Length: 127
Image 1 (cartoon, helix red, strand yellow):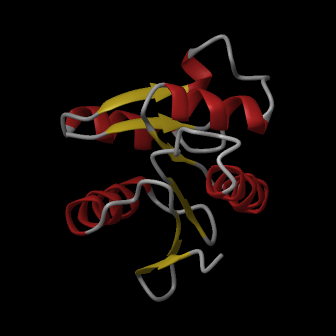
Image 2 (cartoon, one colour):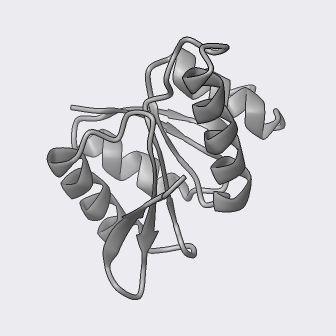
């Protein structure tokens, strides 16, 4: 099973479903870190070896690209375990199913994937 760090902009139902499917989940609203910055959440997910789930795609795409550059230049030594987002808020059940299917098919470490809701498919960041 996978380990997920679920950002505060993701519904609690997603965290509950993931847990019911046997995944380990750290759901930010259940912690004291709710008001922390996006870079904090990125570092926290990476340090805990967790895939980050968020609907804040713009900010986390920028952080992913920066992180990837720092790893390539050997300034940062630890790759993050992946970031998964969607083009818009989506119902919990189909998104959790899509996440689990992606995780079965793809190693998401160090990658950023967006669930294209209308097309029902994942698109990796091309950076």
